[in-house]
Length: 316
Ligand code: SF4
Ligand code: SF4
Image (cartoon, rainbow, N blue to C red; front, side, top):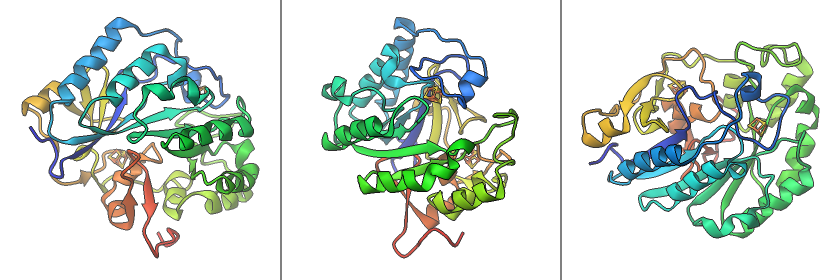
């Protein structure tokens, strides 16, 4: 059974559809959306591992190659259950790429023996409230040295904005790709302000220069609308949850993994209009058809992309 036309499916694998109920993290960042949502900290165990296994044993039978991003709440390497699930998925033969999101605070030497470096990639979030840049870079270089592809992302919280140009230069110096992540307070507030609406003009000038492309700035600082734009989410990119449910992206139910692998549920054949006013994730927006033409979709990370040759990304 093949689920996509091109034979390549991109998956964000998440906990439960109510994605904000649980957190297991060794940090307590002041801007953490999960903490702001009053999640509870508790462990998952055998029952939830069995759920992961059930979902991925079904997906291991499809003909498509799979690129998966393990997208659990909190820190994967500080959560025994999450680590065990990720290692299980990493070893599945039709999983071409297994991308781990991590705060990269835990020494990679403690887990490198468990992964397949040629297909495991690391999307490392730098949270300077809890880890020094020196320690973070040391861990990132250990991952690179082991043969894993790595990139670093930093959330554009207001107190960091002035420091971003120097920070980018430091990562550049070490040959570590750096991406800025839009900061959205999503109906809430941070230190009494709403973001991105309340960035100052000076902050906006820095952000405009630091985002990887002008398009990212435009969608995540100026909040350009995505509603109605054709998107590949639900075509070759889906969100799969621990209970087997499948959504287009953060929202819009598609069905279940069981339905997909049995052929009762079909993914879209062509990109179709976005249903959200604004895409809530700086990475998901690469599903938009217009960006698939403009940039090169990464073959090493689920939602990442590269600028095309001759495209400086600043014309959008
Ligand atoms: S590392 Fe991520 S999940 Fe953990 S507290 Fe910070 S923002 Fe939240
Ligand atoms: S643009 Fe974002 S929100 Fe809209 S359908 Fe695509 S992934 Fe979903």
